[in-house]
Image (cartoon, rainbow, N blue to C red):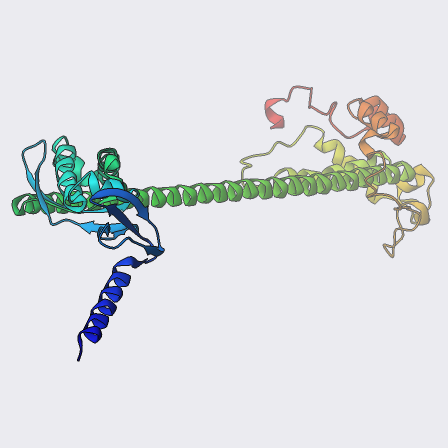
Length: 400
């Protein structure tokens, strides 16, 4: 191989090497800082770029995507002097490749140390209970402090999360005991409230049942009283109607008897006979111990003797004196009651017999012997009855 060929090969290799150093490709979501003779020239974005050989230099590419960095658990002392292990994670993004390259040597390590320091400052001002229950507040405080501190580095902190806070084992046992006691307390409270609600519901049910029972008994008593009242009213009305009808019947009987007596026109002998028939009825009854024979008993016997005598045609004296015939002296022998009108005797709409004018006149004259004797056609002196209805004449010792 001659010298010219060797020289051509060397030139070709140099050209290829220069071309390789001249042409660079930057991927998407990456950024390249280009230096010329050691000084910052520009920030190259994604795409093809050309560099001057042996003059320009491209620094390592910077990832512009959001990055996640998880730090190992760090011991942190709370305000109540308890050491807890805090495990955190941070989300950040490079916004200025030039600042991230020239303002900080290792921005990932710087963010880690800054996060640990800020975390200790924030949690150190809280006690254990606050640290366990205030994670959102801790995350907000950490993000604010880190974002402000990493701004000059060309880094934006998007989010900081506390993954875990682990208290010491002894504290964990105490917390578990407290949790069990609290749960037992809640269980007892819920049980007591359930028993209370059950007792209240039972009492309300018993109250409602007693109220309904009392109302039922009240309605039953009211209905029984109404039924008894209606029964008594109906019984009283029936008794009143019966008495009224009985009184009307008695009034009609008395009126008929009185009319028959007037029609027959009895003489003293007939009255004496009726008087003798009434005397035995006076002695009837278990309560009667003795009865008195009036002094007019002899006159009654004389009247009876006249009653048994008669005229030549066989007509009794009393019937001859009255001038009545045997066919008109009384009711018909067949008992049919011919000549007596019984229509309307028991009509409740009619005026009672006791209120009729004839009955009033009869009641007014019942106690007057002269009026009674005048109606029957005899004089008071011929009557075989005692002088008055009340036996006004004193009785002699021999008359008893």
